[in-house]
Amino acid sequence: MIIPCIDLMGRKVVQLVQGRDKAIELDDAFAVLEAFQGYPEIQVIDLDAAMGREGQPDIVRALCSRKACRVGGGVRSVERAEALVRDGAHKIIVGSAVFTSSGIHHDFLRALATRVAREKIMIAVDTRGERVAIHGWKETLELGPRDVFPALEPYCSEFLCTYIDAEGRLKGTDLDWFRKLRSLTALPITAAGGITSDEEIRALDALGMHAALGMALYRKIFPELFSKAP
Image 1 (cartoon, rainbow, N blue to C red):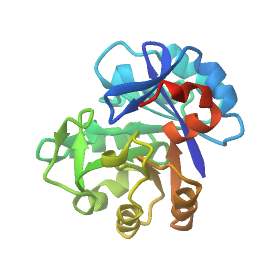
Image 2: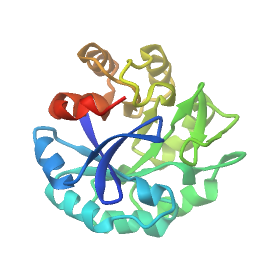
Image 3: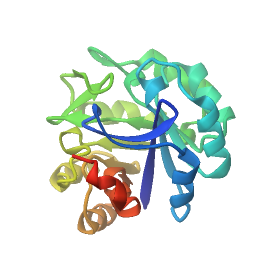
Image 4: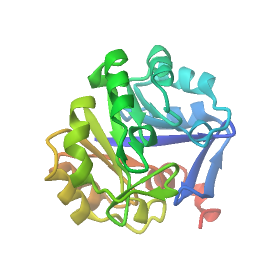
């Protein structure tokens, strides 16, 4: 399954390269959602909330009312996860809060499990150089997916795995890396980061993985914007 990404920043839809440089900016999130109506699910990330700034819960809520949305960005507390459930999120993506600088934040996960159903929770395990990266990919842990998947599986129904090294570059992803990830867990995996071609999407589908698409899909649906993109 292809899952289009709607990343929100400053009440606009953006696409960033390597989580930093803004390549695309669109004013109307609902027009973007309309362009993605043919896809069964949408991934919505509130980048402002993820960066500790004031988020845009009203836009997220409205998107969730119109389409099945998996929502993340700034989910640092059980209360925030519960609020997203109330706002109609199909699934909640939890990332950095799952980890500490030394490992897995078990207390947070146990508290989350008592208040939000496991089938609602996705855990983001993003990697740079095969190690888990957190806090906007600014901190890299001395841990890889092999170290964390077994402990995280009881708390989630799916993993979101971004291959940061290729993210936003439109130069392709690392299918060998995703094959390694597939061997580590029986849970569903949504792959992200640099997925560019139909061949890569088909290869991921053959592995039983969903593909979260950002820049590549925007290039296809909004080609007029790419004269501005790096």
